[in-house]
Image 1 (cartoon, one colour):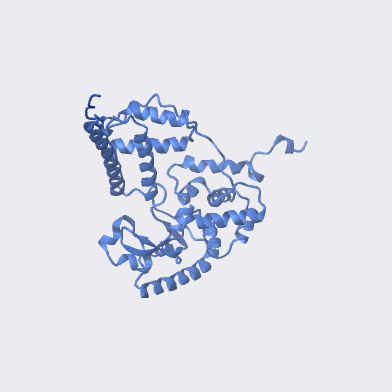
Image 2 (cartoon, helix red, strand yellow):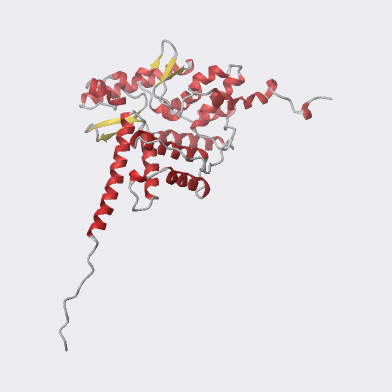
Length: 346
């Protein structure tokens, strides 16, 4: 019987493995550059999360052998078309993905993104916003108590978005002028809206309770909050100053890894969302409403009261008046609007 020679096992292609590892590293580095660029330009953390998510999804769909620097507009076109054609995403979702890719090419890769004429566009839906009647708003507010009642009242009475309400700081409330300053709202814009007179005293009492809680936090060596745009590097003491504290702070502390200390974040929006849904259900109102419906109702009821669209545009913080014009559907209701021919007496 002959002697068997040594068993020869297949040797992995070291060069290919190294190349694959390099490609993975390149994509990880690209996402890191994307995050850094977004933060340098002061984009919100939510936008950062969305953009990084879309770019990661885009990169995962590319051929494995393709390096990020070799990506061109044809790959982008196919990706966006697939979102609309196969995934059937909403137009706003496709637009967000496009914005993320546009930012990647222009701001990170320093390349213009052209040749997208053939992209299949998701159909833009035109929907009339859900609006609550004044009696329905009153019924919902009547089912809320404490902080959720105050926040819901501000969203309806001042036209605030939910996250804008959660992010209010003490310095943003001007009781003497009856105003609320919304900082860094949607589109990174500041605006001023009214503080309803009926909410002045309840809000004063709430802020006084918040002040006592902050004082206790300071006594325990805490009391720091996150500041916008690394302002704490300019003034290290600012994060513990009363004026920078959240109007609606969370009850629990969290560990802020970037600062390395325990802090109170603002109240999470899900707390208000759950409270609103429970209140809506308790009223028996058969409408698909959310916290944002209070903002829609604010604009609609102002129009019903005869205020002009431009004024409402400023209060809502819309860049384009056409966005505000969607609320003019209310002019077709009641004594101001068009009467049905069936309702005209003969």
